[in-house]
Image 1 (cartoon, rainbow, N blue to C red):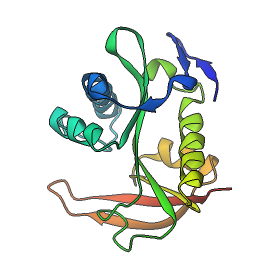
Image 2: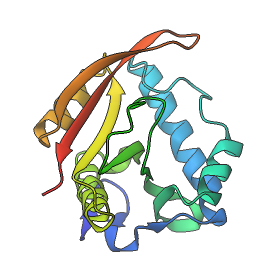
Image 3: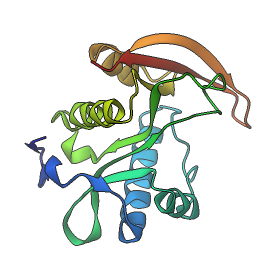
Image 4: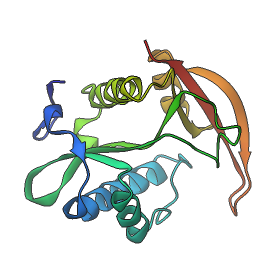
Length: 177
């Protein structure tokens, strides 16, 4: 891993670590900032308030969140890494790891932080014996769809999500080399 610089502080990706209780607020605040940004830009990926702080805390306690800490308790980037995903991949594809909630602070967008985090997830998956790195994104999020395709993720299928919003997600994967 390396360090990358955006318009703000440097993101030292060597500091990526399993999130701890002290990271819960920073992860939640980063998520809220990104929810607002998505809403302003007309992207229905994460509705405002869709990830309560209590859920972040529970997932941190379960060891699912990884974070790059920033100054004063902030989090510059984060993701969840799962070994199963029954909500979106009910067939539980064997030998897979699943990335959820990949987030990069907007002042570091375009600085390759997301790509480095996905490479880390693939490396971690390889350590766990996985052959596939899988993720999902809102079907109408053209920028993210293009971004993932550029990182060699292939579309597996489109899946309808039957919650109060009723939307579709793209289920994507790429081999772990």
